[in-house]
Length: 416
Length: 165
Image 1: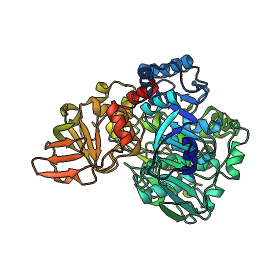
Image 2 (image 1 turned 90 degrees about the horizontal axis):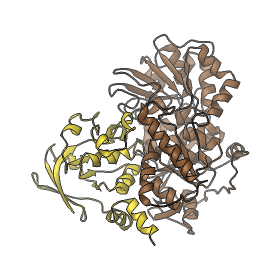
Image 3 (image 1 turned 60 degrees about the vertical axis):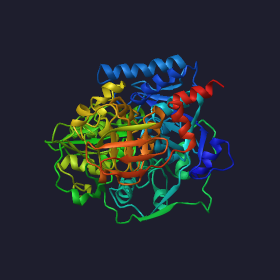
């Protein structure tokens, strides 16, 4: 499938794994950390215009609202660039969101689109059937000038999920379980195609969570074949014409993994790696100082609903800080309309404006030496959320909410 | 090009948060980034690394975020070449794009080296030799397309040459 999208982007009839190709991009994305470097490189090119001001997206989301003067200077560089080159999709604070929640919500990605982003979690958009992959700042600079990027056509690994998910599990558990099984380099350079009846029943939010973490297994992109769930989601959002393509029945996969999910427990990734995954029962009793619910992985409406359902009428444990970060302004507003924010505030959580902040130890929730956090984010490397001697455990929003109440990691079923 | 320098050894899955922690990403200057390069893994590294030194690591070097600050920090520290058993894909293309020499060498080099050993690398041939132990290793050669980018001095220079058509 990925091969079909890339072949079209390259203007070729077909491509084969291993082939190096130059592909036209439908969208190029940068943020307040990666775009300043890209802008500097772009200016070295000496071109007078970008390839298409409608196909570049700039989102200041990592260290915003500006955490210090240096971050403010970086955000300003983005805004100046957007003004100078007439970039249509520039999202200022107050209109923005965490980029990988924002772009699908705004209808900027669609089935068959070729999307590059100077952010590793760009792979998220595979959930709507796009070819989307993370690149570096210099790649972004070249793409902003030429409208092209070079790729090696990846082999594809297929992940089949079968069965009905048990309560308190979702997309996060499906992807964490798989990363635990194949490891952080298990899909290095590979396209990861997710399918099976479990995925067919999974919501769009759950699918975005799964493709978001493809990079945590080393994947080049995640991919899910568009279906009714996808088309319902895209309806009214996407203005660009698109034609979904479907895998050939004889599609060639490098490997196929199958999972039976009926007895899947909520999963927890122990520090210091997203592949250090165990069922939540094995994490029971680990005391935590901070819980974060948010990010491009799990800051969407369904995530907030799942967390609120667990925490409703309860209080956050006295020794725990709970941070809830709706991923976009629209999600924030909808959560407010549904009374979810009231539930969090009533429980004595801090609710924040959209930001990547704590996920990468940027701001809004840095850990001190020796502190432990449980987080719905995507990485738990050494020092990811603060001091190099702090620790991060990863989980789904229901586990995060239940554990915030208990003061220690716990199965949501034991609280509810 | 022949490179020769002192070796710094690292293990598998050295992630980009380890190469340059996110708390320093308000900087874009390679020298500023270099001052914190790999400090959470080996606090001596940013203090004692000398221009020309080489980094030798295991599998999946540079996994995690797409930050180009990671290869920039290594370049800023004067690292002449990173030799790893394998690289994470975004780090791999970033290194090529900014002109940081890297070599993928499936053999477990680290096993036959001690920190501070001298390593000699022939970039064109992909030949790696360790004079102390007498070890000789062959790296995976770059495809011609990437050699062109490297020869141009990085992706920006390569694109410039194309824009001048």
